[in-house]
Image 1 (cartoon, rainbow, N blue to C red):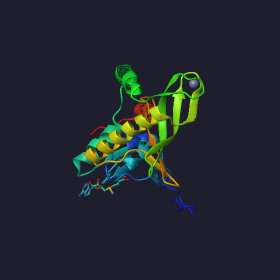
Image 2: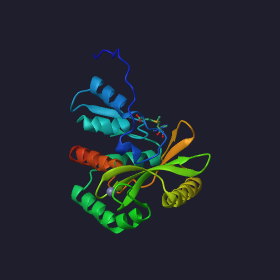
Image 3: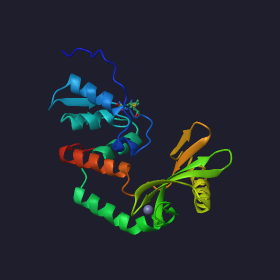
Image 4: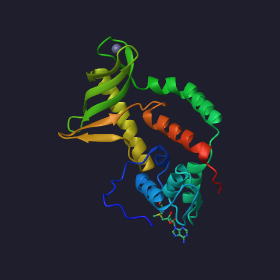
Amino acid sequence: MSVLRQDPLEAKPHTAVYRMHKYFARRPWNVFSSLVGQYSSEGDIVLDPFFGGGATIVEAMKLRRKTVGVDVNPIAVYVTSMECAPANLAELNSSFNDLRARVENELQSLYRTRCSKCGAEGVADWVEWDEKTKRALLMKLDCLHCGSVEKKADERDQMLAEVIEGDFDGESKGRGCGFLRRKFPGGTRRVRCWQGISSPSTSSLREEIYWLSPHCAIRF
Ligand SMILES: C[S@@+](CC[C@H](N)C(=O)[O-])C[C@H]1O[C@@H](n2cnc3c(N)ncnc32)[C@H](O)[C@@H]1O
Ligand SMILES: [Zn+2]
């Protein structure tokens, strides 16, 4: 019989596999991983009769448990089956590269700005925006020559920032969702411009799929 741990576990942010969806029941994966680790052993069967966003099932699979999952909501079943479905890694990679070849240049062209160090064209990563004056203050860009550069926003950046702001507002209203905006003390906020098709979140999602796929035996 296991003994309850004394030290409290702090919930960690969702990893990429849980950020794929917005199903309401997303439990903190690290807490469930710890519970599964504490109360079962490799090869045991873990049952979650109300699996919701799938954290118990996915974490149990990662710990080499056999899993059985049930949920009355078809969205939960779809989401969790997608989280657990074994991916054809070669196909995934080739679809990813295909998508990248088709859209990357076009999308990047919407976020072009000038590098303040060498004068070459770069791609804006984020812009810091003053809420009160509606002016772009700072911009971070990726330059082919200088790498990551932070600069004072110029007039061209101001126009770019206005387009990005307008697009974000329109999109978020239309879809009833929020975009990445970090507020700073003093009324400024950062708006992500270009996350890139190979941004950290897409790469970590692929890494997680790579990791899970060889161990995945679940079928719905
Ligand atoms: C809070 S979530 C579960 C979270 C999940 N155990 C986890 O660890 O992430 C509750 C889930 O129970 C499901 N549910 C509610 N009543 C149910 C029932 N009678 N049979 C199966 N699933 C049910 C809901 O659809 C919902 O997805
Ligand atoms: Zn440069």
